Image (cartoon, rainbow, N blue to C red; front, side, top):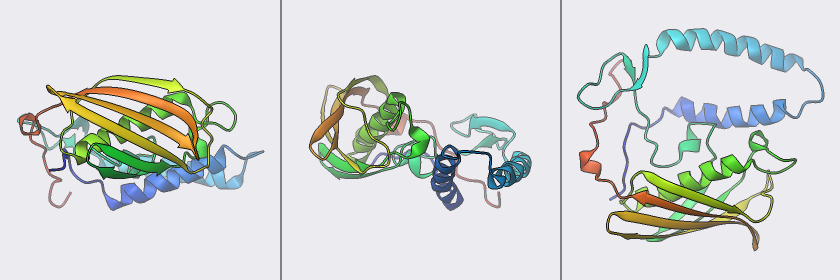
Length: 211
């Protein structure tokens, strides 16, 4: 049974996330100011005002017995967070029991040192992918530790592959992962997590009808 907790993101959010990543990459590549960026800034300013008027007044997630109509819906963060949030990496993963494999391509928006991925975003990627793995096998919980070993600079704009192995015992989950360019090891990660009880989680309020 797959672990999931929260409501599905809107299709608009998925489209927007991918577009924002691409546009940011283009904008930071410019040699000089561009009229298209000025138009984008103006349009985003107008959109911000319209969205602020439509969004719930309380930024807290609408969960549990104290849920209020003034709070926002909580989006499922168990997997594919980058699909609706451009601040998170987007990747493809294939789960086969306690082993998972996949591919990831980091956009220019995630640059740290020249031509390479910021190390903090690699941590976000590993935590997301390893917890995605846990959720797909139906046993997940809070991350208690995450350690990375940087072996080589991780290149931007290139398809990379990753491998994950997990074990679980006594309500503790241990995961190890490797990120590779062809057969060259770029980064390794070790994560520990507490195996939670999904039935003990607070009730997730659905989206309001007609909202």
